[in-house]
Length: 240
Image (spheres, helix red, strand yellow):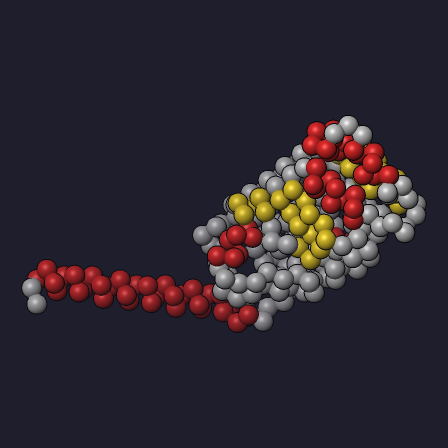
């Protein structure tokens, strides 16, 4: 073997050992942090500015039973979190999670979350400030039932939100999304269509731009036609 060949072999051996060391370190950290995939208490799990797109690379499915402050103040975790999780080849499932208090409060860099299933939330406190001050959030899907509670601060200052998809029924007071003045016509339709047709005496609060945004796509009078089927609700409009 020539000197050049020996040098190349040594480099390859070094690289192999280095990569094996990195993998061992990765396994050791995430085995501990995610309790070998059994972790269910994700309170504060990815809280703070130390989490970035490089440091956030979980090894196991994320299936919390509690998610208070889970991504709160994670200002350096940026972009499409849904895509980032999919690249990891793991599942993000909140269908059994009972509390999202301050779940993503001030997570200003995240533009999209995986679908957030709120169907197991039973108390208003469990949905307090969930996306408050997520000022970079552009796209969100939530899954709810008619008993899913909302706090009027759930979407506080979601100023950039354009795409909101709601699967399920809004059947409780407190749904207030008036800060999201950029909501698309499809998003506004998703909200209105999700309003329960059987409840009475309840109020939903939308941005003052709602009618103009909707009619810009569907034409004059279309907003009145859309909301006519939900005249059992008081639809309030506020400026941000």
